[in-house]
Length: 117
Image (cartoon, rainbow, N blue to C red; front, side, top):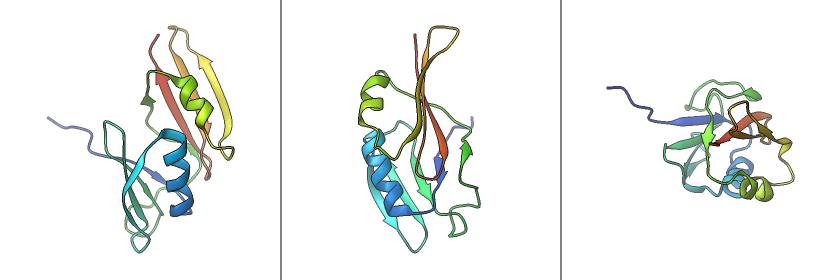
């Protein structure tokens, strides 16, 4: 069986991104290495990391749609605590009655959080 082991997001400024995700999603940085451009975040069911491309964590490009969606029970609470730097904030009702919160982080990465109907 293959399982998902890690979600990671490319960022340009590790310290600013850590602060953003701590505030926006209530995550906590458990390990941060400027040398390797890596921050391991806790607070999700799946391990979540932030990385600076080219420093050992990968070579992804910042900005645009990420190929994963998160899930949460109360999107309004998350929307209310998003930092002012979050852009393109919107709550969208999907055809099946579920709701998606979409926003962009400091580097333009699109984050989507899903709430079941």
